[in-house]
Length: 92
Image (cartoon, rainbow, N blue to C red; front, side, top):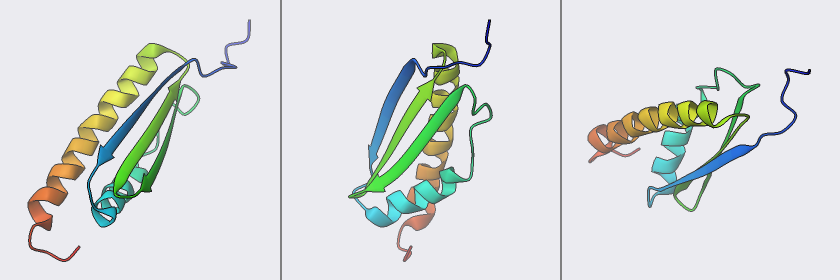
């Protein structure tokens, strides 16, 4: 039996509205450097448009998708809080 998955059966989408193209781009840039640890099991595609960060996840199993999504939300939260804390009153 072939162990390489042929289909990405599970997927989910996340959209965060920063109401600022600049802030959304900063968060995107901070998160884009972190690639998936198991790219053969989970794919992540990000984009920024109209001040919104959009993320699409696909996984071969629900557990891989859940783990990837959960880890991503943790770093997304950290990046967002950092911009909120240190970006106030600054020109970004």
